[in-house]
Amino acid sequence: MKIGERGLREYLHLLAPLFAFIVAVWALRLVVYAAGASGMVLHIVSVTVAGRLSILLAVIMIYSRRFGSYVSVITSVFLLTCFEQLIISAAILFTVLTGKINVYSARQFTFGETPAAHLVGHLTIGIGSGTLLGAAMGCVLLLILRRLVSAEARSVR
Image 1 (cartoon, rainbow, N blue to C red):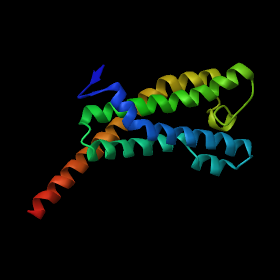
Image 2 (image 1 turned 90 degrees about the vertical axis):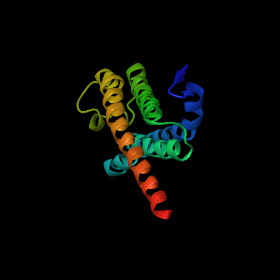
Image 3 (image 1 turned 30 degrees about the horizontal axis):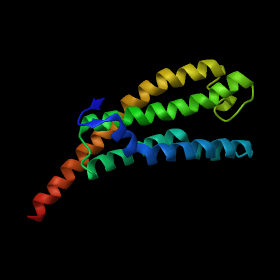
């Protein structure tokens, strides 16, 4: 299956380190919560922030490796956002199935929703809004990179 100029396998290969980074932050957040850290620390160790940072890094990699264009940015954002929301959903599903609370189903992070409603929210609103906002952010960054570098190249001549 080709998306733009590249196949899905090529996207997964490009994004593999970013998937690993998101999983590392996800696991660190579980450990920090289990260790009894404060809410401030838990907000700093954020999978959402890791996901957004991963999007910025993906755009830089797409640009520097000449991997593709805006289609590549949007595809990468969608894959990173889906991955981020799915691993969070897995932790929430664990609570639904076992009744054991973790950081992803703790009351202060669920907006007062039940774990099941919180799970559905991540799989719908989380993926949808994350992809739209991330794609906008990523495309603007790619535009800025293209304009700055081409302007710099013209001024060097």
